[in-house]
Length: 313
Image (spheres, rainbow, N blue to C red):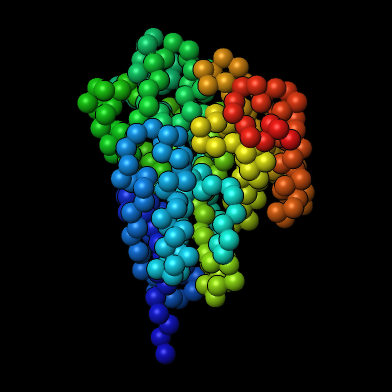
């Protein structure tokens, strides 16, 4: 008897369906099972206004999780950076597939880099972290909020509403828009959102699909993205907190950069540390490392710069 197709829940945007399609292809190749996409509309897709005021990146996640819990699909795919760090009873991350670039990039008119932009140039970003980083690098810029899918944002540059926008390189790469990149920011100096460039495949706890999904996980992607999430979780920093956290494989170990900014970019607190792979191998290990990193950030004054619930520890 032929097994029923696996139902993969996804947001309906071009980027989301492209990312989910990559996971579906990998799952077909690894298991021989058929996979069908189940398109789900989330509040983040239909509501307008600044993302932080809508409840943060979690507005893209709740409908997918509800569909999974209710059995409307067998697994869901999230952009890791959109996934809240709190546990949801009955669900877990089943796999972290190979990770794309973690970097932020600039898409500006006339091929300009960040340094080339004229004084007072209007740059679009809906991320408090990116706003703080832009102002830290170029205090003269006029950084304004922006919403919409990738093509909508790029069109606003083409129409002259913005001189440039900052986006994740991973998303542009996945939908074939890298030709629009005019500058790329080194992740060691410009840490991105925790989990940026990574995908999270979420499944029901103890579901029979979980062993199949586990075949998709990449050890390097899992080690770096889950460590970043552990630090973010310990900070208890929401989407409105300007926090950059990036980990990378460095030889036999993992190098981590965590930075907290004042919203206006005038001040920042930064911690850089390296860890052996074995030191961040389990959830408990990552929690221990995260506690150490966050304590250093808070001791250096990070709680004075941003609203961090974890600063009360």
